[in-house]
Amino acid sequence: MKGTYFLGIDQGTTQTTAVILDEESNLVDQRSVPVPISFPQPGWVEQDPWEILQSVREAVLPLLQTYPVAAVGLDNQGETFLLWDRQTGQPLTPAIVWQDKRGVSICETLAKQIDEEELRQRTGLLLDSYFSAPKLAYVLQHTPSFQEAARAGRLLFGTIDTWVIWNLSGGRLHVTDPSTASRTLLFNIHRLEWDEALLDLFGVPRGILPEVRPSAGYVGELDFGTGKTYPLWALLVDQQAALFGQACFAPGDAKCTFGTGSFLLMNIGPMPRLSRHGLLTTIAWQLPTGVSYALDGGVFVTGAAVQWLVESLRLIPDPAASAQAAQQSQDHGVIFVPALAGLGPPHWRPEVRGALFGLSRATRGEDIVRATLEGIAFQVYEVVRAMEQDAGYPLSHLKVDGGPTANHYLMQFLSDLLGKEIRVAAAREATAIGIAQLAAHIVLGLPLEELAARWRAEAVYVPRMPEDERRAYLERWERAIAAVKIFHSKS
Image 1 (cartoon, one colour):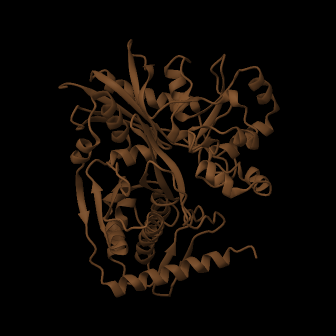
Image 2 (tube, helix red, strand yellow):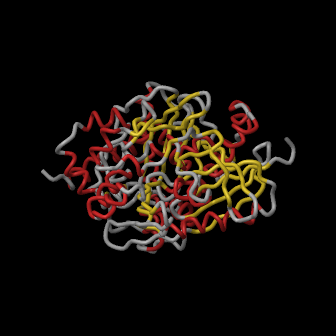
Image 3 (tube, rainbow, N blue to C red):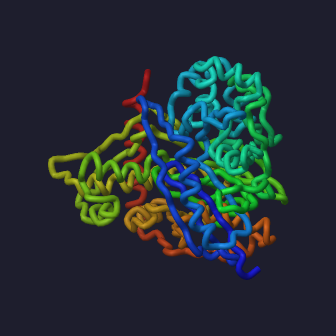
């Protein structure tokens, strides 16, 4: 319908972005508002729940005052959560961010008691503090009054989508969707429900958890303070929203979103399948037509590594200068493993730290910048290869989005390593656009095939590195990875 607009809200870790799409999925307008983050002690990462909510309102209100919005979609930062009082609405904890490590001790204790393969079978995940449940267990164990509040029916748990919706609905809606629930370590991805055995394992009272609604469908009305309400029709985790925004609707379709880290998802269709190569299995979305699952592999440090070059090493004035610096490098023998926050999938070695190899007296700053960009690409290559091994067939191409995709050196090197086309999405805000498109899909009945046909590439990179040079690069990387693992081995 002409003149129909859809609002997509991407509540991310560092900012909230809101977009307006028209009925043909064209990006009409957008606004972003930063969200502060704090580090109260080593390993703890927190945000103010009220500041998150305020960032949503500030991003959305000017758009609602300009466009007659027919439906809203909301995606969220995944594993981040908080507890609040049902009666007063006051937060009882800060928003405990997915990067927070306070759940490590819980994982170490439980690892001695459980069958981790059974945990993987139920959740698709590993026992890791990255997910919500270990941090939630820590909070519940260290605050006895929370158990009493839970027994009295006053304690509520929610990921950020749940918190925002609860407030914008005046406390009427305490909900989430399967894609977000599947990031908690408390959700059975086969039965699509909270798992009683996992609730017992982590000591989580069932009554504090939200209702799980489908990812697409009418949820309820939201009040942003404009004097009218707006219907909420779509809910997803941010990376799943980007998967939808990249039109990865068919099994085998994959995308990589570059930001602070790099997050890769591959659609694997209607049946969950556990990875044999170090990846996670997660819920992509639940539509009226059924559930889609995805393989998940995240590179913890991408943009953060380039920021490190700027802020800590001061080798370049800003991240945008990294591509030119890399092209000026003369020494291609330097290898950097950018494990500044540990090695994620497929290795899962959180204790490993970054390392530079091949330095000489002639090594210059440009060589380290180049090695950093290449180290990012090597890690993405490893996740893609693991996905291909799990899927049983090679990808024909990889769709990418996010700020670092503007780095020509990084994108070309990634194409060379993979031996595949890298297709850069014309829409940089694939996450917010994806959740708005999901709302449009369900409200207007837009076929997925039509949404896929509307996807456009801003740039396409094709491999041009000779095969012998590519193999030499990969062999050096494999030696570097083996070395850092041995260096940080506990044995």
